[in-house]
Length: 365
Image 1 (cartoon, rainbow, N blue to C red):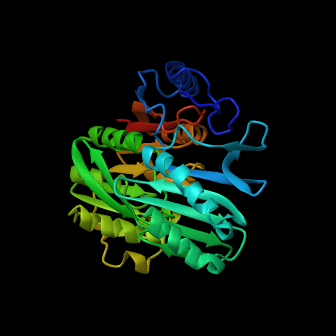
Image 2: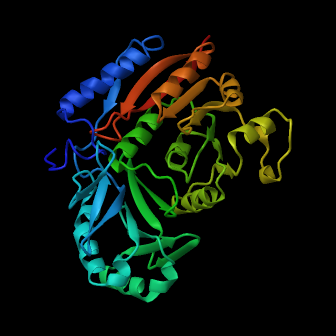
Image 3: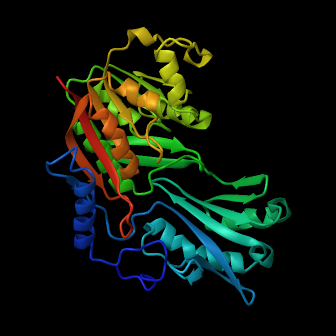
């Protein structure tokens, strides 16, 4: 990657060629999971630049001027003019946004951060201030009108919105388009192309699907495309806003075989065990499901013990992991009842040590 800040910026820490990065990550995963898998690791690569659809930058103030900044390897602020890993929409707007802000000192003062989110149909910018953004409301409206972006301004306890600030995304999954609408606070996979590969891999790994239960479903990133492989789907998520978005996304994609429930993993486990009844499950007949598969995409901490215990009773497990260490811990438990039959590496974050994995497990006979 031809970046003037490579080696100094704390974001991209691997300065190896991409081929060498790939081999390094495969070797690390092979060593970590040698106990569970001796077969080939499918590696889903990324573009080397322009791949991030979500990015955050600090703002560096010096001599009445501002620039973007990142953390350096020495944990100091590193002023930057550009970023090679953000996608084209973000890289194009970055200098224009800064130029426009500099024309109004009221917008410059106490600005400490900028966040960008791009998608197929939208570009959203969030400005972060150490002052009440209500005091610059008119100024913010002017730059939104000029730049024609979705603009959000935040300060402590205050959030202002200008223009359309919903994320409108289109994903190409196995040559079929899926449409999503999300809020700016939704968790989204930052590497769109790898996300598409990850969902497609999960779908292509399924055969003889009956019913699916999915935990940590978010806004339906996996849920909606994968639903076409099953008769019925039950998907759970603790965030109310994510559930609301998931329901809208079902309508956008004409999907009608999914039931969403706003429950934590622990709560749905309790409901399945008939330990508790939940008003949020009204109208959902848990006994009518015949779960042939379970899909989990848990937070970095991995799956809770109750979830692992429940998973051990389902024939097929699709496990998407953002943390190989907790995945390994979870496989120590799951390997007592299941065996790994497919293992994939998804390179969401090129030039970093971060590795995401996908594992397919089948119940031992």
